[in-house]
Length: 306
Image 1: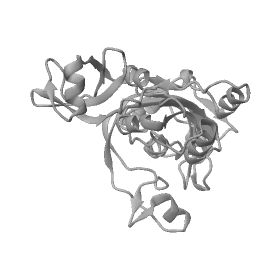
Image 2: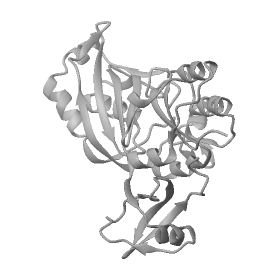
Image 3: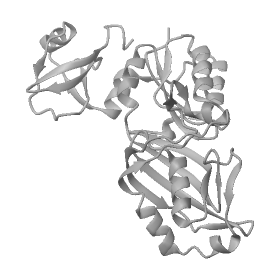
Image 4: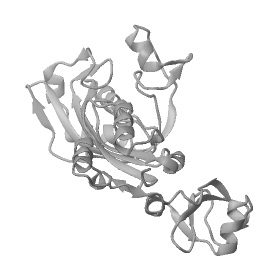
């Protein structure tokens, strides 16, 4: 049985998140595998995979902030808001060439901070019991309701590039709340500038405090297994310590938490998940504050760190 913990995957293009989970099940030799947040097949980058009891951690990781690098192409909009969809509109080349840096900055600034975002119509959001993307690809028109998201950073990282004398490519970095659609940002900046926009590349570099620099591709994991080595799983306690505030429990507190009792909160902040460890460094539970006490959101069994 594999060590419970997280595998940090650098997903390659044309893989679905489901493909990655299926492959990890084979590599790890267990069916108990899940992921914290999907990536579109076109996208690459960080995917968090929980193995064995560490799947319980995924609930607390799905909502963490994300960071992406992307390329936005101005000059055309597509049905999917990315390069894989058919064109909906295409701007006159002269209109694209006329876009100034102040205009670009103003369009980006309008999408920074706390905004209401209409998700891409080909998202996985359900409409009348069916995924929005399935309805769109079936020929239905879908208009999703706007929802609040937070864009902490939306920056252009290099000089905009003219492509084929009719498109302008922007290499950007986006730091955002969970649930933000980067394709929708590409669509909206294109609409604001009156030329249309879509994504041509997307890469997730961070989920919370986890970085793609810690990750490996499925091919690299396969090579490790072929060499007869254990998968480099980030054990549950280490995974929790990297992301959450931690509290080391005394022996009586360990007993109390395992029996569903609450313990004093002391100076623990509100609305923040806390990883509770025993004095040997084993992950005992994820705690949350309730008034002046801490209660368990999930408790890990005694063998969950082995």
